[in-house]
Amino acid sequence: MNAKTARLAFVASIPVMAGYLVLGAGFGVLLQDRGHGFFWAFLMSLSIYAGSLQYASLDLISGGASLITTALMTLMINARHFFYGLSMLDRYQDAGKEKPYLIFSLTDETYSLMCAPVPEGADPRRFRLLVSVFDHCYWVLGSVIGGLLGPVLPFNTKGLDFAMTALFTVIFLEQWLSSKNHAAALLGLGITAVCLAVLGPDRFVIPSMVLITLTLATLRRRLEVAEDER
Amino acid sequence: MNGDLHVLLQILVMAAVTAVLRFLPFLMFRNGENRPGVISYLGTVMPYAVMGMLVVYCLKNVSLLTAPHGIPEAIALLAVAALHLWRRNTLLSIFGGTAVYMLLVQLIFV
Image (cartoon, rainbow over all chains, first blue to last red; front, side, top):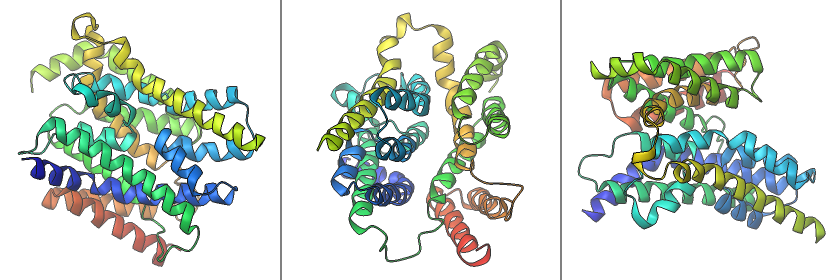
């Protein structure tokens, strides 16, 4: 049972491994370029563990931004994690002593794996913990490799980070195929696309999340009725 | 040395603020009974909407107006969807789509 759960958790985490090793290495390389070697990459990936923030932090660190600015940037970039927690309240309810770690390590990618059903034959509690630990290891490992190897990677990895896009797309498709009502999925796509078009790539995430939340809350009655009819 | 200390403090601030954001919902709605209905409801519908958001998020730097007009991304996404509808094998769909994308951006749309 334990070995089977571990194997299933590893298989589920493979797409994230591909993405995290590449994105983590990218971060390690860039951080090293700015004069902070692999130890700093290790420290940041271990303790912060948030990809888009760590990329944004490159400018904060080399520019010597104040702690207040750093805190505000973090708040802006990572506000979406608050919303992720909302949908994990029940799933993590009975997690026991590993719950703080599960919450700490809830990145975009781990969140997407947690939204997918636990595979048949796996112990759900162990499965979720292992997937979270594996993902965290990939990220730390990737950034250390990047910091160490720098620009001498053995093969052309251009485009490999598309694994992340593909992962989200597959989970989106799976959710689509497993439900009759597509209102929430379409709202997520549509609202984000409009916000991106209007506000540009640097500041559309928080407005999108707020609009999605408000719209879903407003449509609650209609969507809940639709839910009963599934 | 002073510079390194400041970087260390910056890392500490980023780690702390990120952790607060992640823990906050669990601290606010600790037990099921005093959780407002709308929160439970958002918890069930949010994953569907968020996954749509994340797909768009990954494509945020694709420019439709300048070459290659998002064509590699569109082809690779179609490959992911087609593979997935065909075999419904998550790993196959992800790696197949990624391989298609890497070939496109390394060999064709250089």
